[in-house]
Structures are given as C-alpha cells and as structure tokens.
Image (cartoon, rainbow, N blue to C red; front, side, top):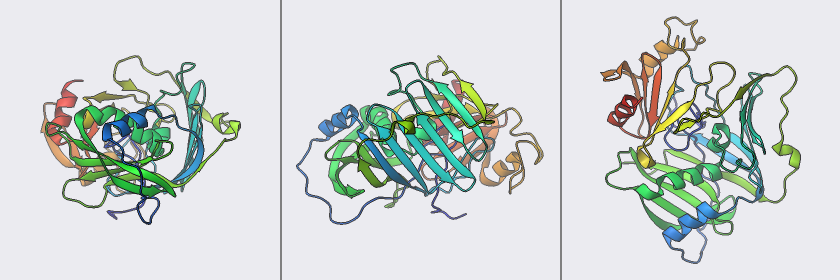
Length: 360
C-alpha cells in the first residue's frame, strides 16, 4: 500500500478527527510568503471561530490520506481526491465528493439531511427539526468540509487543550491565522497537536492539520484549494432523489451520545455513539450482523478475501474484557473490531478503546 496515497477514507461515521475510515484528509492549500496580520490573542481567536457565521460560499477542497488505513470491514467507505463545498450563509450546505464509482452528495436543507450515493443508487434522509439545521451533524457534510470539521473539533477539544497562535498562513489565496491546539498532559491521545488555519476576515476555518508525535508532516489534513465568497443558487440546498432510487429514512436517536450514521446506505444502518470527550473521544458502532461471517460471500467479496480475512491481514489478534477481536493501528488512529461485530475507533491507545467498549 502507498503510505501517502491521495485519498480520503470515510467510515464508521463521518467523524471529525481520529475516526476511521478514519477521518478525512486533505492537501495543504495555498503557498507563498506568510501574510503580515495584526496580532490576536489565542482564546479570542477561538471564541471568534465558534461565534462566526459561515458566509455564502463555494469552494473546492483538496483531500489526502496519509494514514494508509484500510476501511473497516462491513462499514461503508469511500475514497476521493477532492470535494465541492457550498454554503448559503443561512446554515444550509452541500458537499459533493467525487469517486471512481460515482459521486457521494450530502445536502443539508431546512428539514432534512440527505446523503445520496450515485454509484449505489441509494439515498438516506435524516429528519432535522425545523430551525435546527445549524446543529445537525452529517458525516458526508462535515467530513469533507474544513469549516464544519475544524469548528467541531475546536468546540470539543478547547477545554482539554493548550491553545496558542503560531504565525500566519495563506490558504486558497486568503490570509489566515494559525491556531494551534495541543492536548493537556492528562489527555490520552496519539496526537501531538492540531492546527487550524482561521480566515482573518470571516474567522471561519480554512484548513485543519493533524500532527502525531515524532513527525514533521501532517498525518491528516483537510483544506480549501479554492474559495469564492458570494450568494449561491437556492436549488443547491434542495434535494429530490432520482426516480427508482432506494431511500432509507432515519430518525435521529434520542439516546444521549448517539448520532445518526449518515454514511449508511439502505438496510443495516448502524448508529454511532461517542464515549469520552476532547482528545480521548472514542466512537462506538456495530457492524451488520453478517459482516464477519466466514466465507468471501458474506458481506461481499474483496480483493483480500472475506472481511474476516481482511482483518486477519491488516489487524493484530487481541483479547480482553470485551472478548476477542482484531486491533488495527496507525500513528494517529486505533481501531478495535471485536468478533461479535462491535467497533471502537479513536485517536487513542488500545487501553482507551478497551475502556470504552466496557461501557456498552
């Protein structure tokens, strides 16, 4: 496998940082001399990022995967080199990811979040209470949108981080501050720091970069290559599934910590829960019931055999209070798939995953 293949792997959920499939990755955007900007205090920059309204815009996002982590068997995944992002300035958005086997589109409107896989000819509709579209999570949407992704991370990790401003940058021809979040000493994480390039004018994040210990290159990045501010056509934020497309309707669960897995398509939709907070966050889900059955015909054939065969080749056999399973590791992400189909993922060491599994 190519350790720096240009791709984004999205699985389990469209999570923010440290999730497998296992996150979203993007190439740095912009180049040249760092701009000279007025100084800004770190906490003030954080607050401005969380308060800022995302303006109407369109942009192209570059995607790059440096983890070389395969998709977890039985969980929908995709690979893409770029995405198109649209916002209307009123909380509605559209993200379109180009793939070899078709396009994956996520549209957040006033009443629903749609995801549509043109290759699989399937769509998922997640109801959004009226007026709550600003808060609606969406895997496909946030995973490829550096603005949504970075704001979600900053909001979740700021209380468990040391925050600083480390110079400036140019992203998509726009001057930006480099906001740096470093985990506090008591945080159990594989990550060293996360950098967020914050637009000087709008205060919206333009790029997110994730660094692990002992490296100078980002392990994960997502950022704008091109960005244009301005009104967008209203039809971009509406969606009507094509005739004949299989549509699954999902009602977000009320259980605390649960979020709809909007990357799921068709029957077998699996919710995702979060355990912990900040840098220690672990994502929990469960594979479809037949995903780990023996035989290449269970869960669909792969070029490495059955899903269980794939786990044997890319994971280490482990046992613990959860029973037995396979552990998949990279420098930034750890995933544990148990023999009974439970999945735990996070930017954390194995013991943290074991603890999280013990809570469910």
